[in-house]
Picture (tube, rainbow, N blue to C red):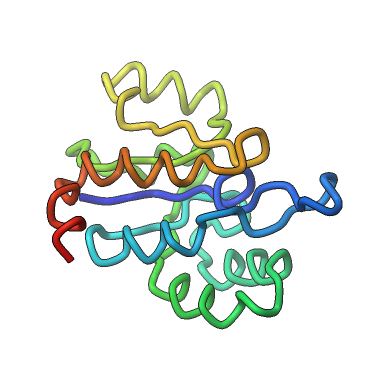
Length: 153
């Protein structure tokens, strides 16, 4: 199974002290630590169209210094997805994926709907719901078949 991650609005939410600025979302590091051993993980974010380094730079820019080392260790294991016009071009043809995103483009939603894949998109919005990654991890545990295994560890 492949997991695709958007960044802004998913791994980066609002800074609690300055809501107009981005900051690493609550539970972002826990989500990465959970999903990386269980799936092939890809960035599917406008900041890094085929360029994982650009995504890392963007994440680090909005992460507290105390979290940067752990973030870099985890995020370095995520690969960049490539696409031209719509991010859905990067999704696997077999449909074996979950895509975490707060706001897919209308054309991307139309593609998902046309293929019967709307259920593979997991709406996550850490700007509006700071704890949303906790919910997302619970959903991923079920979809990746890791619910029981993760509880036994």
